[in-house]
Length: 155
Image (cartoon, rainbow, N blue to C red):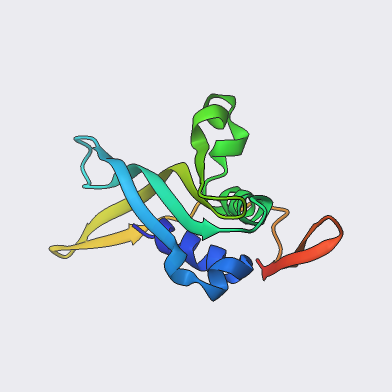
């Protein structure tokens, strides 16, 4: 599975708190399933809930959710594109530890397509990217909250 690693990198690049405290980001894969058929290949799809837990976070939650939404547009766009997945594709819970710190648990319903082809007796495995949005270009983003720049990243 590739998406957990890609999302960890995106968040540690974009969120100053996680850049300074990478051990505060915990990633778990829950309710995983392999979906395959009796087609001629062994191709399959991973389906799972990615659980992110950010501990002892004092930052505004927007500093987490805006980069996650940005990442989802590229790596799991169906969460935003399909009405059926809006309510369950991205969920969260937060525990307020005191007046300034909280632990935040975020769940993302993710899929990854894997093509398995047999070539000369060997099985070749290829993970497929999500289709690219035609408007996607490499850009630099800055996130402002209450007119203060709190994060930046590059796509």
